[in-house]
Length: 214
Image (cartoon, rainbow, N blue to C red; front, side, top):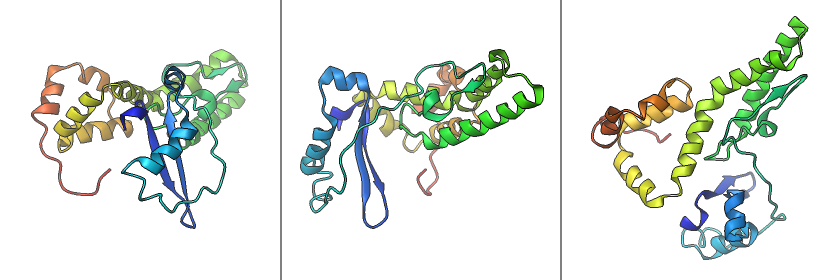
């Protein structure tokens, strides 16, 4: 649905035949378009061919509520003297998917490690705390950066459709993206600047083997 770009509609299945359903869109675009998320969520579910039959017998069992999501779209200071920002407080939400639970847990683990180091060294200064920032950027930086790049690309739906058709069965692209999110692709920014990379994207790379979608 191009009206949601750069955003999305989600459906999360719950117990007892219930589901969490909602819309997400960048706040600047909501203001720019005067887009009412609550109203349009109900309209889309009632009128869009992809959803209207599926939700024809659905019943609203709770109020429709909205929350702002602090996206990890740019580098921010995450610590200082005697404090560290984790999860949503640190703007560590994936800019593309809005996923935050995994990053919140992971950043909490990193913060715990840093807290132990501070206690052992009896150093709670802003300078010593920077170790937390450095590790967050090393572990999550590539994923957040990639999410932001893809989010920006969503402004060009024709380009996205063209690229998806070209790369869907390209094993090179699938492996490349998987490696980035698994944090095993260390120099992906340099790679995408090379002509050989784009040759493999559009004309090479081999076919993806049949198997489960990831």
